[in-house]
Length: 436
Image (cartoon, rainbow, N blue to C red):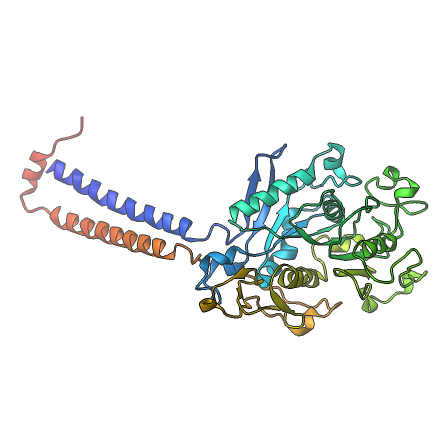
Protein backbone atom coordinates (compact mmCIF):
# COMPACT_ATOMS: atom_id res chain seq x y z
CA UNK A 1 0.00 0.00 0.00
CA UNK A 2 2.95 2.33 0.59
CA UNK A 3 4.11 1.92 -3.03
CA UNK A 4 0.61 2.54 -4.37
CA UNK A 5 0.31 5.72 -2.27
CA UNK A 6 3.69 6.97 -3.48
CA UNK A 7 2.91 6.26 -7.13
CA UNK A 8 -0.41 8.02 -6.76
CA UNK A 9 1.29 11.13 -5.46
CA UNK A 10 3.86 10.94 -8.25
CA UNK A 11 1.18 10.60 -10.93
CA UNK A 12 -0.79 13.53 -9.56
CA UNK A 13 2.24 15.74 -9.17
CA UNK A 14 3.50 14.86 -12.63
CA UNK A 15 0.18 15.66 -14.31
CA UNK A 16 -0.19 18.91 -12.41
CA UNK A 17 3.39 19.89 -13.24
CA UNK A 18 2.89 19.10 -16.92
CA UNK A 19 -0.29 21.13 -16.99
CA UNK A 20 1.26 24.15 -15.33
CA UNK A 21 4.39 23.87 -17.48
CA UNK A 22 2.36 23.82 -20.69
CA UNK A 23 0.32 26.80 -19.55
CA UNK A 24 3.53 28.75 -18.91
CA UNK A 25 4.89 27.74 -22.30
CA UNK A 26 1.63 28.74 -23.95
CA UNK A 27 1.71 32.13 -22.25
CA UNK A 28 5.34 32.95 -23.00
CA UNK A 29 5.40 31.57 -26.53
CA UNK A 30 1.86 32.44 -27.51
CA UNK A 31 2.40 36.15 -26.96
CA UNK A 32 4.30 37.64 -29.89
CA UNK A 33 7.91 38.26 -28.95
CA UNK A 34 7.69 41.85 -30.19
CA UNK A 35 4.23 42.89 -28.99
CA UNK A 36 5.72 44.81 -26.12
CA UNK A 37 8.92 46.84 -25.65
CA UNK A 38 11.88 44.58 -26.27
CA UNK A 39 15.42 45.38 -25.19
CA UNK A 40 17.88 44.12 -27.78
CA UNK A 41 21.55 43.51 -26.97
CA UNK A 42 24.28 44.02 -29.57
CA UNK A 43 27.34 42.12 -28.43
CA UNK A 44 29.11 42.82 -31.73
CA UNK A 45 29.45 46.48 -30.80
CA UNK A 46 32.28 47.56 -28.52
CA UNK A 47 31.31 48.23 -25.87
CA UNK A 48 28.18 46.03 -26.09
CA UNK A 49 25.14 48.21 -26.72
CA UNK A 50 21.38 48.03 -26.30
CA UNK A 51 18.32 49.57 -27.86
CA UNK A 52 14.59 49.48 -27.19
CA UNK A 53 12.40 48.05 -29.95
CA UNK A 54 8.66 48.58 -30.33
CA UNK A 55 6.60 46.74 -32.94
CA UNK A 56 3.21 48.14 -33.98
CA UNK A 57 0.23 46.22 -32.69
CA UNK A 58 -0.91 45.44 -36.25
CA UNK A 59 1.77 42.74 -36.38
CA UNK A 60 0.33 41.13 -33.27
CA UNK A 61 -3.25 40.75 -34.36
CA UNK A 62 -4.99 39.54 -37.53
CA UNK A 63 -5.76 42.12 -40.19
CA UNK A 64 -8.55 41.43 -42.64
CA UNK A 65 -6.64 43.41 -45.27
CA UNK A 66 -3.62 41.11 -45.28
CA UNK A 67 -5.11 37.89 -43.94
CA UNK A 68 -4.32 36.18 -47.24
CA UNK A 69 -0.70 37.33 -47.04
CA UNK A 70 0.37 36.74 -43.42
CA UNK A 71 4.10 36.87 -44.13
CA UNK A 72 3.85 40.35 -45.62
CA UNK A 73 2.96 42.01 -42.32
CA UNK A 74 6.69 42.42 -41.67
CA UNK A 75 7.15 44.76 -44.63
CA UNK A 76 7.00 47.93 -42.56
CA UNK A 77 9.17 51.03 -42.18
CA UNK A 78 11.55 51.43 -39.25
CA UNK A 79 11.86 54.68 -37.32
CA UNK A 80 14.89 55.44 -35.14
CA UNK A 81 14.52 58.07 -32.39
CA UNK A 82 17.69 59.39 -30.68
CA UNK A 83 17.41 60.93 -27.22
CA UNK A 84 19.19 64.11 -26.11
CA UNK A 85 22.28 64.23 -23.90
CA UNK A 86 21.47 63.27 -20.30
CA UNK A 87 17.98 62.20 -21.42
CA UNK A 88 16.51 58.77 -20.84
CA UNK A 89 15.59 56.16 -23.43
CA UNK A 90 12.15 55.45 -21.85
CA UNK A 91 11.21 59.13 -22.21
CA UNK A 92 12.14 59.11 -25.89
CA UNK A 93 10.21 55.87 -26.29
CA UNK A 94 7.08 57.45 -24.80
CA UNK A 95 7.22 60.29 -27.34
CA UNK A 96 6.85 57.97 -30.29
CA UNK A 97 5.55 54.49 -29.35
CA UNK A 98 1.85 55.38 -29.59
CA UNK A 99 2.48 56.80 -33.08
CA UNK A 100 4.29 53.61 -34.02
CA UNK A 101 0.99 51.81 -33.48
CA UNK A 102 -1.07 54.47 -35.24
CA UNK A 103 1.08 54.54 -38.35
CA UNK A 104 2.22 50.93 -38.46
CA UNK A 105 5.92 51.78 -38.19
CA UNK A 106 8.47 49.90 -36.09
CA UNK A 107 10.27 52.06 -33.53
CA UNK A 108 13.86 51.68 -32.33
CA UNK A 109 15.27 53.86 -29.52
CA UNK A 110 19.03 53.37 -29.03
CA UNK A 111 20.71 53.77 -25.65
CA UNK A 112 23.55 56.27 -25.65
CA UNK A 113 26.78 55.80 -23.72
CA UNK A 114 26.07 57.45 -20.37
CA UNK A 115 23.04 59.02 -22.05
CA UNK A 116 25.02 60.55 -24.91
CA UNK A 117 25.95 59.90 -28.55
CA UNK A 118 29.12 60.73 -30.42
CA UNK A 119 27.93 62.88 -33.33
CA UNK A 120 31.36 64.38 -34.00
CA UNK A 121 30.79 67.87 -32.65
CA UNK A 122 28.49 66.74 -29.82
CA UNK A 123 28.21 65.35 -27.11
CA UNK A 124 29.10 64.04 -23.65
CA UNK A 125 31.01 60.93 -22.64
CA UNK A 126 30.34 59.18 -25.95
CA UNK A 127 32.17 61.96 -27.79
CA UNK A 128 34.98 62.12 -25.22
CA UNK A 129 35.58 58.39 -25.58
CA UNK A 130 35.28 58.59 -29.38
CA UNK A 131 32.59 55.91 -29.43
CA UNK A 132 31.73 54.82 -32.98
CA UNK A 133 28.01 55.46 -32.77
CA UNK A 134 27.55 55.46 -36.56
CA UNK A 135 28.78 51.87 -36.61
CA UNK A 136 26.50 51.08 -33.66
CA UNK A 137 23.49 52.35 -35.62
CA UNK A 138 24.45 50.20 -38.62
CA UNK A 139 24.66 47.15 -36.35
CA UNK A 140 21.28 48.05 -34.85
CA UNK A 141 19.63 48.30 -38.28
CA UNK A 142 21.10 44.93 -39.28
CA UNK A 143 19.78 43.41 -36.05
CA UNK A 144 16.29 44.84 -36.66
CA UNK A 145 16.27 43.43 -40.19
CA UNK A 146 17.21 39.99 -38.86
CA UNK A 147 14.94 40.06 -35.82
CA UNK A 148 11.84 41.11 -37.78
CA UNK A 149 12.77 39.05 -40.84
CA UNK A 150 12.41 42.07 -43.11
CA UNK A 151 12.86 41.55 -46.84
CA UNK A 152 14.37 45.03 -47.05
CA UNK A 153 14.85 47.76 -44.47
CA UNK A 154 13.75 51.37 -44.88
CA UNK A 155 14.78 53.65 -42.01
CA UNK A 156 13.51 57.07 -40.96
CA UNK A 157 15.45 58.93 -38.28
CA UNK A 158 14.59 61.67 -35.82
CA UNK A 159 16.29 62.95 -32.70
CA UNK A 160 16.36 65.83 -30.25
CA UNK A 161 19.46 67.97 -29.41
CA UNK A 162 22.34 65.47 -29.20
CA UNK A 163 19.95 63.14 -31.04
CA UNK A 164 19.43 65.79 -33.73
CA UNK A 165 23.19 66.06 -34.24
CA UNK A 166 23.27 62.27 -34.52
CA UNK A 167 20.53 62.21 -37.15
CA UNK A 168 22.38 64.81 -39.22
CA UNK A 169 25.63 62.85 -38.87
CA UNK A 170 23.87 59.78 -40.27
CA UNK A 171 22.66 61.77 -43.27
CA UNK A 172 26.08 63.29 -44.03
CA UNK A 173 27.99 60.01 -44.15
CA UNK A 174 29.84 59.33 -47.36
CA UNK A 175 28.64 57.01 -48.59
CA UNK A 176 25.28 57.41 -46.92
CA UNK A 177 23.63 54.11 -45.82
CA UNK A 178 21.24 52.90 -48.51
CA UNK A 179 18.57 52.19 -45.88
CA UNK A 180 18.22 55.84 -44.73
CA UNK A 181 15.11 57.32 -46.37
CA UNK A 182 14.40 60.64 -44.57
CA UNK A 183 15.32 62.60 -41.44
CA UNK A 184 13.71 65.00 -38.96
CA UNK A 185 16.39 66.61 -36.75
CA UNK A 186 15.13 68.63 -33.77
CA UNK A 187 17.38 71.30 -32.21
CA UNK A 188 20.58 69.82 -33.55
CA UNK A 189 22.32 69.89 -36.94
CA UNK A 190 25.84 69.39 -38.22
CA UNK A 191 27.59 72.64 -39.12
CA UNK A 192 29.61 71.42 -42.10
CA UNK A 193 30.16 68.43 -44.37
CA UNK A 194 27.40 69.18 -46.90
CA UNK A 195 29.48 69.10 -50.09
CA UNK A 196 28.67 66.27 -52.49
CA UNK A 197 25.70 64.99 -50.47
CA UNK A 198 22.82 63.26 -52.29
CA UNK A 199 19.23 64.57 -51.88
CA UNK A 200 17.32 63.42 -48.81
CA UNK A 201 13.88 64.43 -47.48
CA UNK A 202 14.28 66.58 -44.38
CA UNK A 203 11.85 68.05 -41.82
CA UNK A 204 13.93 70.40 -39.60
CA UNK A 205 12.76 71.86 -36.29
CA UNK A 206 14.51 74.49 -34.18
CA UNK A 207 13.53 77.17 -31.68
CA UNK A 208 14.69 80.70 -32.39
CA UNK A 209 15.10 81.21 -28.62
CA UNK A 210 17.04 77.99 -28.03
CA UNK A 211 19.51 78.67 -25.23
CA UNK A 212 21.46 75.42 -25.64
CA UNK A 213 22.03 75.26 -29.40
CA UNK A 214 21.70 78.81 -30.69
CA UNK A 215 19.53 79.29 -33.78
CA UNK A 216 22.07 81.69 -35.35
CA UNK A 217 24.99 79.35 -34.72
CA UNK A 218 27.35 78.63 -31.86
CA UNK A 219 29.94 81.28 -32.69
CA UNK A 220 30.57 84.91 -31.81
CA UNK A 221 28.51 86.07 -28.87
CA UNK A 222 26.17 83.08 -28.96
CA UNK A 223 26.56 80.64 -26.10
CA UNK A 224 25.87 76.94 -26.65
CA UNK A 225 25.91 73.96 -24.36
CA UNK A 226 28.23 71.00 -24.22
CA UNK A 227 31.37 72.84 -25.33
CA UNK A 228 30.16 73.07 -28.94
CA UNK A 229 31.41 76.65 -29.36
CA UNK A 230 34.93 75.76 -28.24
CA UNK A 231 35.14 72.94 -30.79
CA UNK A 232 34.08 75.11 -33.74
CA UNK A 233 35.95 77.60 -35.83
CA UNK A 234 34.29 80.54 -37.55
CA UNK A 235 34.13 78.88 -40.96
CA UNK A 236 32.40 75.78 -39.65
CA UNK A 237 29.69 77.47 -37.63
CA UNK A 238 26.46 78.14 -39.49
CA UNK A 239 23.06 79.12 -38.24
CA UNK A 240 19.90 77.08 -38.82
CA UNK A 241 18.78 79.18 -41.80
CA UNK A 242 22.12 78.73 -43.49
CA UNK A 243 22.10 74.99 -42.89
CA UNK A 244 18.53 74.70 -44.18
CA UNK A 245 19.44 76.57 -47.38
CA UNK A 246 22.30 74.10 -47.89
CA UNK A 247 19.76 71.29 -47.68
CA UNK A 248 17.54 73.15 -50.15
CA UNK A 249 20.42 73.22 -52.62
CA UNK A 250 21.20 69.56 -51.99
CA UNK A 251 17.54 68.68 -52.61
CA UNK A 252 17.60 70.67 -55.87
CA UNK A 253 14.94 73.18 -54.87
CA UNK A 254 14.18 75.79 -57.51
CA UNK A 255 15.16 79.40 -56.86
CA UNK A 256 17.69 78.56 -54.15
CA UNK A 257 21.06 80.19 -54.77
CA UNK A 258 23.62 82.31 -52.94
CA UNK A 259 21.09 85.16 -52.82
CA UNK A 260 18.28 83.08 -51.35
CA UNK A 261 16.90 84.16 -48.00
CA UNK A 262 14.31 82.91 -45.55
CA UNK A 263 11.67 85.02 -43.78
CA UNK A 264 13.37 87.34 -41.26
CA UNK A 265 13.42 86.56 -37.56
CA UNK A 266 11.95 89.21 -35.22
CA UNK A 267 14.66 91.04 -33.30
CA UNK A 268 12.65 91.24 -30.10
CA UNK A 269 11.68 87.65 -29.32
CA UNK A 270 10.22 88.57 -25.92
CA UNK A 271 7.04 89.90 -27.55
CA UNK A 272 6.34 86.85 -29.71
CA UNK A 273 3.02 85.07 -29.32
CA UNK A 274 3.11 81.33 -28.70
CA UNK A 275 -0.05 80.92 -30.79
CA UNK A 276 1.79 82.20 -33.88
CA UNK A 277 4.34 79.40 -33.74
CA UNK A 278 5.55 77.13 -35.11
CA UNK A 279 5.91 78.66 -38.55
CA UNK A 280 6.76 76.05 -41.17
CA UNK A 281 7.97 76.82 -44.68
CA UNK A 282 10.16 75.59 -47.50
CA UNK A 283 10.78 75.96 -51.22
CA UNK A 284 7.80 75.03 -53.37
CA UNK A 285 9.57 72.90 -55.95
CA UNK A 286 12.20 70.48 -54.66
CA UNK A 287 13.29 67.04 -55.76
CA UNK A 288 12.27 65.79 -52.29
CA UNK A 289 10.36 67.35 -49.39
CA UNK A 290 12.38 70.09 -47.67
CA UNK A 291 10.71 71.84 -44.71
CA UNK A 292 11.83 73.96 -41.76
CA UNK A 293 9.73 74.80 -38.69
CA UNK A 294 10.67 77.65 -36.36
CA UNK A 295 9.60 77.52 -32.72
CA UNK A 296 9.79 79.79 -29.66
CA UNK A 297 10.07 77.08 -27.00
CA UNK A 298 12.87 76.72 -24.49
CA UNK A 299 15.31 73.94 -25.28
CA UNK A 300 14.38 71.74 -22.33
CA UNK A 301 10.66 71.83 -23.19
CA UNK A 302 11.08 68.93 -25.62
CA UNK A 303 12.92 66.41 -23.47
CA UNK A 304 9.82 64.31 -22.77
CA UNK A 305 7.43 65.26 -25.57
CA UNK A 306 7.37 67.09 -28.88
CA UNK A 307 4.27 69.01 -30.04
CA UNK A 308 4.61 67.99 -33.68
CA UNK A 309 5.51 64.34 -33.16
CA UNK A 310 2.42 63.36 -35.14
CA UNK A 311 3.44 65.51 -38.09
CA UNK A 312 6.94 64.04 -38.14
CA UNK A 313 5.68 60.46 -38.27
CA UNK A 314 3.12 61.46 -40.93
CA UNK A 315 6.01 62.97 -42.92
CA UNK A 316 7.82 59.63 -42.76
CA UNK A 317 4.66 57.64 -43.56
CA UNK A 318 3.92 59.82 -46.59
CA UNK A 319 7.37 59.08 -47.99
CA UNK A 320 7.08 55.35 -47.23
CA UNK A 321 3.75 55.22 -49.05
CA UNK A 322 4.57 57.14 -52.22
CA UNK A 323 8.37 57.24 -52.61
CA UNK A 324 9.15 53.70 -51.45
CA UNK A 325 5.77 52.03 -51.99
CA UNK A 326 3.14 52.10 -54.71
CA UNK A 327 0.39 53.99 -52.98
CA UNK A 328 -1.31 57.32 -52.63
CA UNK A 329 -1.10 59.14 -49.30
CA UNK A 330 -4.19 60.92 -48.03
CA UNK A 331 -2.80 63.84 -46.01
CA UNK A 332 -6.06 64.63 -44.25
CA UNK A 333 -6.91 61.05 -43.26
CA UNK A 334 -3.35 59.72 -42.89
CA UNK A 335 -4.12 56.69 -45.01
CA UNK A 336 -2.01 54.95 -47.65
CA UNK A 337 -4.22 53.52 -50.39
CA UNK A 338 -2.47 51.00 -52.61
CA UNK A 339 -2.55 51.08 -56.35
CA UNK A 340 -4.10 47.98 -57.99
CA UNK A 341 -1.85 44.97 -57.63
CA UNK A 342 -0.02 46.16 -54.50
CA UNK A 343 -0.55 45.24 -50.85
CA UNK A 344 0.63 45.65 -47.25
CA UNK A 345 0.50 48.79 -45.13
CA UNK A 346 2.67 50.88 -47.40
CA UNK A 347 2.06 49.06 -50.69
CA UNK A 348 5.52 47.55 -50.94
CA UNK A 349 4.56 44.09 -52.19
CA UNK A 350 3.31 43.02 -55.59
CA UNK A 351 0.51 40.44 -55.30
CA UNK A 352 -0.91 38.00 -57.84
CA UNK A 353 -3.91 39.23 -59.81
CA UNK A 354 -6.35 36.91 -58.06
CA UNK A 355 -5.33 38.40 -54.71
CA UNK A 356 -5.34 42.05 -55.72
CA UNK A 357 -7.06 44.47 -53.41
CA UNK A 358 -6.64 47.98 -52.09
CA UNK A 359 -4.96 47.93 -48.70
CA UNK A 360 -5.05 50.79 -46.23
CA UNK A 361 -4.64 49.36 -42.71
CA UNK A 362 -3.11 52.51 -41.22
CA UNK A 363 -5.57 53.78 -38.64
CA UNK A 364 -7.15 57.12 -39.36
CA UNK A 365 -6.41 60.07 -37.13
CA UNK A 366 -8.64 63.09 -36.74
CA UNK A 367 -8.32 65.56 -39.58
CA UNK A 368 -7.51 68.47 -37.27
CA UNK A 369 -4.65 66.65 -35.57
CA UNK A 370 -2.85 66.34 -38.91
CA UNK A 371 -2.76 70.02 -39.85
CA UNK A 372 0.63 71.67 -39.52
CA UNK A 373 1.07 73.47 -36.22
CA UNK A 374 -1.84 71.80 -34.42
CA UNK A 375 -0.51 70.29 -31.22
CA UNK A 376 -3.75 68.75 -29.99
CA UNK A 377 -3.79 64.99 -30.00
CA UNK A 378 -4.97 62.09 -27.91
CA UNK A 379 -2.53 59.40 -26.90
CA UNK A 380 -3.92 55.91 -27.17
CA UNK A 381 -2.64 53.14 -24.98
CA UNK A 382 -2.35 49.69 -26.49
CA UNK A 383 -2.78 46.50 -24.54
CA UNK A 384 -0.48 43.61 -25.40
CA UNK A 385 -2.25 41.39 -27.88
CA UNK A 386 -1.75 37.80 -28.86
CA UNK A 387 0.16 37.04 -32.00
CA UNK A 388 -1.79 35.51 -34.85
CA UNK A 389 1.27 33.61 -36.02
CA UNK A 390 1.37 30.16 -34.55
CA UNK A 391 -2.07 30.58 -33.02
CA UNK A 392 -3.04 26.99 -33.81
CA UNK A 393 0.03 25.69 -31.97
CA UNK A 394 -0.57 27.51 -28.73
CA UNK A 395 -4.32 26.76 -28.89
CA UNK A 396 -3.52 23.03 -29.02
CA UNK A 397 -0.99 23.53 -26.22
CA UNK A 398 -3.60 25.22 -24.07
CA UNK A 399 -6.05 22.38 -24.64
CA UNK A 400 -3.41 19.79 -23.73
CA UNK A 401 -2.54 21.78 -20.61
CA UNK A 402 -6.16 21.94 -19.51
CA UNK A 403 -6.59 18.22 -20.15
CA UNK A 404 -3.49 17.50 -18.08
CA UNK A 405 -4.79 19.64 -15.23
CA UNK A 406 -8.17 17.95 -15.44
CA UNK A 407 -6.57 14.51 -15.32
CA UNK A 408 -4.41 15.62 -12.41
CA UNK A 409 -7.50 16.80 -10.55
CA UNK A 410 -9.40 13.59 -11.38
CA UNK A 411 -6.55 11.39 -10.14
CA UNK A 412 -6.24 13.48 -6.98
CA UNK A 413 -9.96 13.04 -6.23
CA UNK A 414 -9.86 9.32 -6.93
CA UNK A 415 -6.73 8.92 -4.87
CA UNK A 416 -8.49 10.60 -1.97
CA UNK A 417 -11.42 8.20 -2.35
CA UNK A 418 -9.14 5.18 -2.60
CA UNK A 419 -7.26 6.37 0.46
CA UNK A 420 -10.38 6.18 2.64
CA UNK A 421 -9.86 3.42 5.20
CA UNK A 422 -11.71 0.23 4.24
CA UNK A 423 -9.90 -1.91 6.84
CA UNK A 424 -9.55 -1.45 10.58
CA UNK A 425 -7.12 1.27 11.64
CA UNK A 426 -4.90 -1.26 13.34
CA UNK A 427 -4.32 -3.09 10.02
CA UNK A 428 -3.31 0.09 8.28
CA UNK A 429 -0.84 0.92 11.02
CA UNK A 430 0.52 -2.63 10.91
CA UNK A 431 1.30 -2.37 7.18
CA UNK A 432 2.96 1.04 7.44
CA UNK A 433 6.71 1.00 6.82
CA UNK A 434 8.50 4.10 8.07
CA UNK A 435 11.15 5.56 5.75
CA UNK A 436 14.78 4.61 6.39
